[in-house]
Image 1 (cartoon, helix red, strand yellow):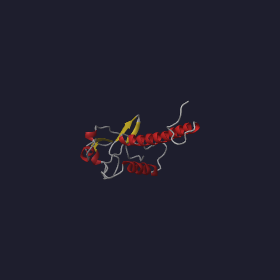
Image 2: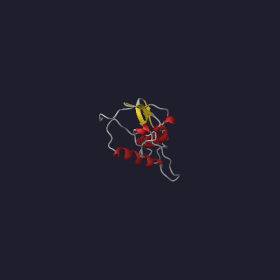
Image 3: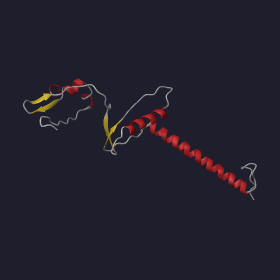
Image 4: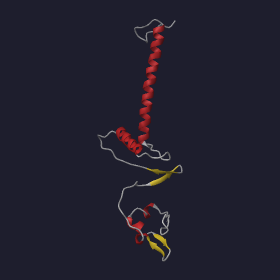
Length: 145
């Protein structure tokens, strides 16, 4: 940090930091004048950034929201967002996870695959049991002795 700059940390309510005018009116300390407004010592430039940075479980959280067209696939959008996050080559202290309905959609897909595989295993077990009892015509027509 250069010698002429001062680190200033301000905590304001969201309504007091939501517009450029509100941020420009913040008072910051000055070595010569006591305190001055931020617009006298800083320039504002438009840019892109997360809309909100919060904390969850003592970690910073950046939430990305999006609305989908009626014909769009939510799974495809989720895969694209996670691929873009992985492309950023973030260090180990950052992680990208899905939340809310997106997370539940992923869990439902995983549970569906698990149930399907288990049903195949169950059908195989029934077929093996019926073939060991001599009924190869239909697995459900086994004779119980």
